[in-house]
Image (cartoon, rainbow over all chains, first blue to last red; front, side, top):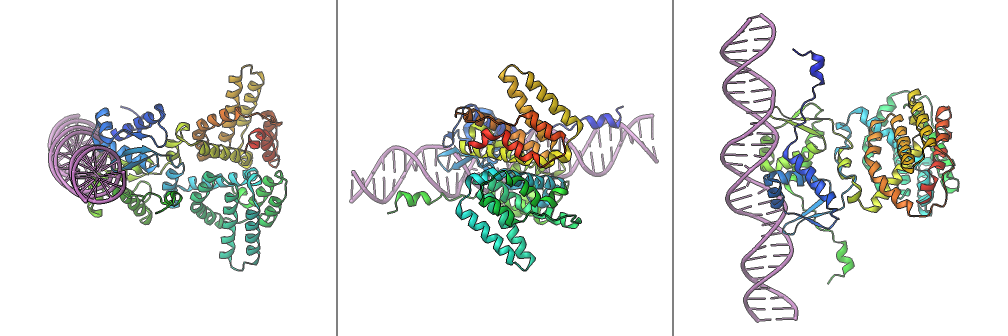
Length: 231
Length: 231
DNA sequence: TAGATTAATATGTACTACATATAGCAAATA
DNA sequence: TATTTGCTATATGTAGTACATATTAATCTA
C-alpha cells in the first residue's frame, strides 16, 4: 500500500487529445517550413488524411489557431497564414473576475514596472501634440471637483503616456490590463494609505517637457510610491 | 468606381462563425454568472441545445477555451473552470519566425522598459542567495574566455534578475520572450555599435547589494544604453 | 472582348455512431 | 461495518456522412 504522500506525487496523466497533437504538429509545420504570412496551408481534408485523424479533430485544432489570429479561412481559397496578434490570447482571459487575486496583483506590479521604465521611449517619441494633451489633462485635473472626474483624469494621463511611447504592443497591453487594475485599486483603497506620492502629474509633465531622461524613472517612482509601498 | 486607395480601406467582413459566437457567449456566461475555478459548466449537449447549434460547433469553442487553460474536461464529470494561464496564449504564437520584425522590435523595447523599471521589485524581494548567484555569474563572466560563455552569462544574469523580482507572471513573460530577443540581438549586431554600456553587471550587482533603490533605474539605463540608442 | 452563367471546390454546420474513461453505486470480501 | 472490487450509466473524444454556402475559375453568350 502506498502512503498518501507517495500518491500525491503521482500527477494525473495530462491527457493529450488528438486536437492537442494536431495543433502542435501544425505549429511545427508552419515553423519548420517557415511558412510566411500570406502563404496558404493545406486543406482540412489533406491535413486530416496526412495525420490519420478525422476532419473534426483537425477543425478543433485549426479553430484554436484561428482564434489567436494565426490563420484565416476563406470559403474556397482554403486557409492562409496571417500575422498573429500577440495580444489576442491575453485579451480573452484577462477579465478580473476569472483571474486569481494573486495573478491580478502580479499584473499590477507589472504595470508599475512598465511605467517606471517607460522614460526612454517617451523622450524618444514625444511630440508637441502629446505634451499638449498631457498639459490639458493636468489642467483639467486641477479644476476637477468630483472624485470621478479626478479618476478619469488619472486614467487618461497614464493612457496618454502609453500612447506617447509609440509602441503598439505596449499600448494594447496596457489597454487589456486596465480593467484588471481597477480591481487592485479597489483592493488597495481598503488598506490605509500611509503616504501620498509627492510627485504629481504636473511634475512628470514638466520633466517630459525638458530634456533630461535621467530624471524620469525616479520621478515616476515617487509618483507611484503609494502603490510601491504595498509590494 | 472606387479608387484603389478607397478599396484598401474596406476591410473584409469579419465573418463571424458560430464557433466564434459560442465562444463569446460562453465567456459571457462564465463572467456574468461569476463561475469560480473549480465550478462545473454545462455539458456539451446542453450548451448545444440551449444555443441551437450542433455539438460540433460547441466543441470548437470549448477547444479554444481549453487551450487557454480556462476549462478542463473530465470524461464523465463534465467540464470545470480552471484558473486560466495568463501567458498560455502568448506562448503559442511568440515564435520569432512567425512574428513580424516590427512586432519583434516592439517586444524588445518592452523588455528594455521592464528591466529599467524592475528595481523596486528587486530591492523588495532580494535574498542573500540571489545576490550570491549574481556574484557567481559576474565572477564566471569575468573569467570567461569564449564569447559563447560570455553570452551565456549575459542571459543568465538577466534571467536571475527576473527570478529575483519574485513575480511569476513577469518571469514567465521573460522566458517566453527570450527566443524573440535572440533575433533582435542578431539584428542589432549588424548595426554599428556607436557606444558600449559603461555600467557593467558588476556595477548593477553592487547597487543591489546596497540599499539605494534610487540608483538602480539609471544604472540599468546606462547598462542598456547600446540598445536604447537604437530605439 | 466584356460580361454573365455555371461548375467545382473548400470551409461551415448538422447529425449519427461508437470508443473511452470515470463517477457513483452495488456487490463482495475481510 | 468498513473497504475493496466490479458494474453501469454518462459525458467527452473521435470518426464519418451529408449538405449549405461562398468563391474561384472555367465556360458560354452577346
